[in-house]
Each structure stands twice: as structure tokens, then as C-alpha cells.
Image 1 (cartoon, helix red, strand yellow):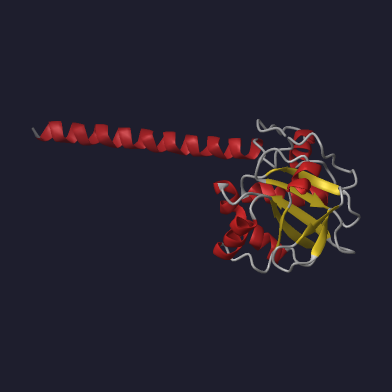
Image 2 (spheres, rainbow, N blue to C red):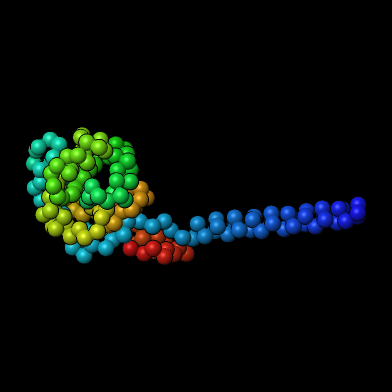
Length: 206
């Protein structure tokens, strides 16, 4: 009986050591895959906009201030991020904290405009519920049409010269940040950068 217990313990230790080696090998493999697969940037699916082209100028009314602002025409020396969203879009709402954080972190060079369309009362309630009273928030169907927005949430980053620096569908904070990276690198999308890098692949091509 004593010998059986010793043998069973030895077998368990062998199995435990084998499992440890397997976990270690899988951990290393995950690390290799993480290095080889580039992070996904905002998906460029808009056929109306072209990076490097002049942004359409669309006068719109800020629902919070009541003032008329021009989407696509940033203030002098600043950039402008147009975030197209809808009050009934769950993904759009989940990105609001990220947008607010980006608005604060990049306030030295960028302004954010929250853009939607539909009933005024619906937007006023949405602004109040989500603490957007101090943001630039517009409701304009024409703005979405001019920018060829077909799916939400969608963002367009316009540089200091009024040129479209980057754009795309944004479903995460990483997608939003990829727009800033594209502008800084001077490329249409972050996928273009990674696809051009030797030894790098990305299955989520823009």
C-alpha cells in the first residue's frame, strides 16, 4: 500500500512538471504572436473621404453654446476631431470616456466635436445624462452626408491646415489613438505603417 502511494505521488509530480513546461511554452508562444501581430487601427471604410484632401466645411450649430461653428475648419493652429455618434449606439456611449480623456490630454492642439442628427430633445437629454454640457455637440444630417458617414461610431481627424489627416470606424480607445498616431507619422492609417514594416503582418487590414 505504501509503495502504491509513493508511485502515485511520483506520477503526479511528473504530470505537474509536464504541465508547467507546457504552460511556459504556451506563454512564450503568445509573446511571439503578440510581437508579430500589429494592433488594429481605425478601419478606413469611407469612400467619400481621402486622407490628404481638404476637409469639407460645414457650418453647424453647437447645441450647448448656441454658436455656429464650422466642422472641417479648425481654429488657427489647432486640429479638429469629428466624432460621429448616435444616442442609441451602445459602442458610441462606451467610447465617451475615452473621447473625453483624449479631449483633455490633447487640449493643447485639438478640439473635439461630437456630431449626430435627429430630434433636438433626444440630444439635449443625452448631453445631460452623459455630462457633455461643456463639449461641442452638434446635430446635423448634412454634416454626416458631406463626410460620407455610413456606419457608427466614425471619427475624422483634421489637421491645422484643414486637411484630412486620418479617419475610420472607431470601436475602441486604441482605434481613436491610432488616428493620432497616423497624423503624427504622416500616413493614411496605422495599418499602412505596420504592413510596410518588414516581418510584420496584420490580419485586420484597413
